[in-house]
Length: 363
Image (cartoon, rainbow, N blue to C red; front, side, top):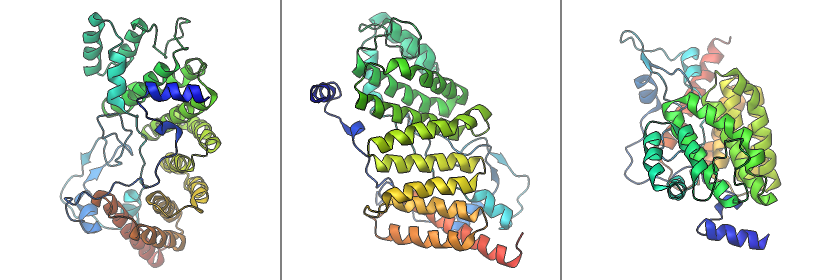
C-alpha cells in the first residue's frame, strides 16, 4: 500500500487530497470588494418577475457542478404588477442551498490526457470539445500512446492496468459532465449513465482504498446530476442508490465532511421531489456526524437547510429555531462571501414572513 501511494503521489504531482476529508469551511470568504448586502425584500421583489423552469444550474467553466439555483429558462411575468408576499410567493422562493461537487484539477488532467494522443488526433479532440461532443472526445482516447483509455467502452482492449491514468480519465469525465450541464443536459445524463456502467471494469485493477475513494466521488457526481434533472423519473428512482453507494464509502473512509455534504445533496434532490420530511431526516444524519467537531460553515449550512425543510412542512417553531442556530454558528465564522450571506438573509426573512402569515390564516 505504501509503494502504491508513493507511485500515486508521483503521478498526481504530490496531490493526495482525494484520500483526505475536505475542509468543513465550505463557504468562500469575503474578498473585501463585494457589493453591499441588500435587504431581502429588494432581492425577492426584484426577481419576482422570473419563473424558474428547473432548480439548479452549472456556473463554472472547469466542470464544477452547479452553484446556483436561480438559472434555467426564465420567462417574464406579464405586466409590472407588484408581487404580493403571500404564502404561495414565499414558498416558491424558499429553497435549500446547493453545495457543488468539483472535478479536481480539470485543466491539468485534460492537458495530461490530450498529450497522450497522436498529433493528428489532437486537433480533432479540440474541435469536438468546442462543439460539446464530449463522447466523441472520449472515443478518441481509444488511440492514445498508452493504449485504449476510453473507460466508457466495453472493448476488452481497455488498459485497466494503468490505474492512475484511469483516474485521470474519470476526473476528466466529471469535468465534462459539469460543462455539459451548462449546454446540453441530455449529454451530461448520458455521460453519467455510461460512467456508472463502466466503473466495475474501469476501476477493477485499483488498490481497494483508491477504488473506494474514486467510486464515492463518481456516485456523488451521479447524485448531483439527478438534482439538475428533477423531471427525469429514471434518475429520480436511481438517486437513492447513488446516495447510498456514495455515503457508505465516505463513512468507510471516515470522511465525515464529505458524507455530510453528500447528505445535503441528497436532501436537495428530495426537496425537488417535495419529500421534505425525508430530506429533513438525511440532513439530520449529517448534523449528527458533525456534533463533536468545531462549529463550521458546513455545520451552519446544515441548519439553514433544516430550517427550509421544516418551514415547508409548516413547522415554523422548529424552522425559526434552526434559523437562530445557523445565525449563531455563522456569527463566529470568518467574514463570509456577501452572496452566500445574502442567501441566509433571504431565508430568514421568508421563514419569519411565512410564520406570520400562517398564524394569521393557517391552511
